[in-house]
Image 1 (cartoon, each protein chain N blue to C red):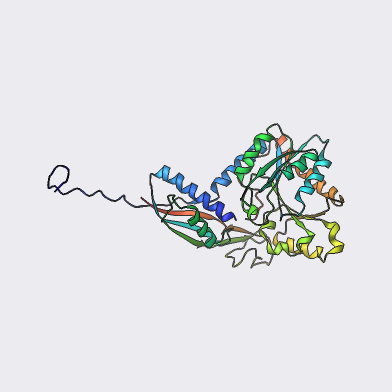
Image 2: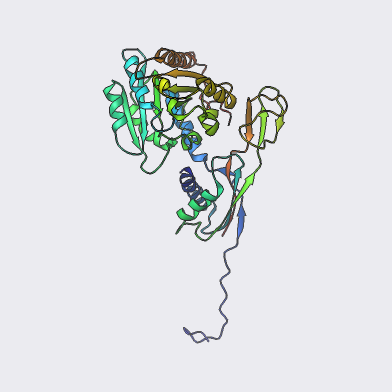
Length: 113
Length: 257
């Protein structure tokens, strides 16, 4: 599953940050997960906990917080907050809609020492 | 009293490391996306049009590429394939038997290709230029759709054995695609697959997607597929030879996510 790969990528990001910022322990980590991202947060958390044993993240509190999405109709330029994805434009009803955000998976915050 | 020297000084406590909060703001896919851009620039320098092919296992990707390789033989432009599978060299062997250069990537437990996998294949293609490189992704309609490999175009295959509502069930496989190929059309007389419904469902997800029907085994529909491929290659080559091409900083800009 791709959540396992993403957990590995997260650990690499944290290791890189530890070298750059000079810390040796993570106490808390916040991930901002776009509402329509490709991950299931529970699965991602499970993969992170499985993968981080013995790493900087061992014992850290890992928080996955959902971030809202926004979309734009490519026909009438209406911008809106979609309830589902994919979806039709609430303005003109057409299907040529693109997400402006809502698929990101961002390492937002690290509490370290 | 100190057990070392006998003094009665109170030891100075070592302060705990100070906690601080960092706000990296970096994407979990950032490293992959940067490597994908490096890959894309590698392809651009060699004027190689890179196409990522995604589908369920068994939709006919390798059979299509075998037939494509045979048809492409003898052209001035090159055609080669990066094969992605969990195990074995079987698909790369099939492409080589069809006359094209093929590089096999085995992902082991991983269910999709990432940009680093493609990077590992590039040295074997170092002598290639002026042509098409097809990346046949691991058979999987979900995970591969989320990883930019450095391609210029993405093609999704849907075989008629999978049901016409597949586009609705797996919308990400359509949203990021430039072309949908409906494959194994020789089996239609034996199935209840509704072709018009499949076309409608696909366009409800991605109104701009191009759709072709192809049967690599009987070669029905191969001509329009080859014409599409040739058209894409000529447009790409024209951009690069005229010097007007700029290496994209992102996946093809009309990808809707």
